[in-house]
Image 1 (cartoon, one colour):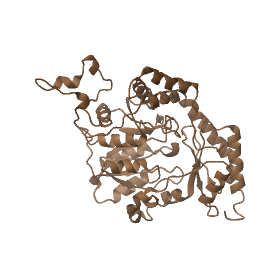
Image 2: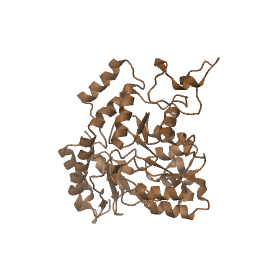
Image 3: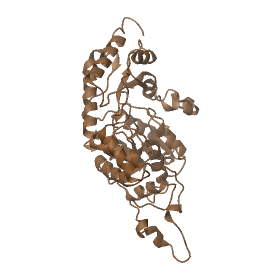
Length: 409
């Protein structure tokens, strides 16, 4: 059986959680979702959490809600500075909510956008008022420098929105990622640090924003209460209507939104995972440390991941440093040895076919991202890897890469 990039074990706790949902007779958003929102907000260190159907939905809901905020209103078609190296959902969400992604280069070791590159870009533009936001991505668990990014954002009157989809539990300057800006999205995709299948969430300390997101994820309906009391005859929205009006807040829509609600099943699984979060993060850190030690003799050829007990690793990222080894060949040989791999996403404006219209404009402007997009990959470091799995991975890398120097592969 292959050593997978990610894995999920459905144990007794998870089965019990699913059966509780089935026995409750309610599978759409309900008690489990509310409980997850409360506990995940506490986990991150924010006041509010709003669960949605996916990490992509979280990004779209957050950006859409900001168009309607009384204080932070974002104008459509303005520019958002973001990461060229990440899963494409971030850019897709920017595009589908009618904003324009603008890319700056990344740090060659941690793959995240840097304050220096953001600052240099803004200093070089004709009109900074065309920009509305900085949306950094905490990639593979590595945190972007949010203090410096927030300082730049404040100087230019921009908002900060963290994409924390890949960094549940990463610590940045004593705080968890997701709590360092106006709002942040998370994804609980099956291979992520906290897993629920397909589910996402937004966290924020801003109550107006939390209420707007609650509306946006439910097709923009008037309801924005965190706990519905309509069945008790206490709907605050209905107090605004008198006389002959016969309106139902659940079917009265005052903004345009989406159907991005989630289900009780995912929230139930997420709650079980949250209970295990400290173990998950620690186990992944231990696996990264063990792999780094086992592969240290290859560090002239492969850039191994930075190790820190502050990082909650999504995976084990590797960048090829030698022109004598091809990523395609390395991945092929690893897969032959039963080790699943992934490329490091690709540089969005220069290497993703969906964004080919940007390729010429960004040619030569993102050297680090271009190199990473062609020469970086990742393998698993998840909590279910056994000692034998880790040793198998080390042996395979040594066998495949060990001969580099005398020949090209």
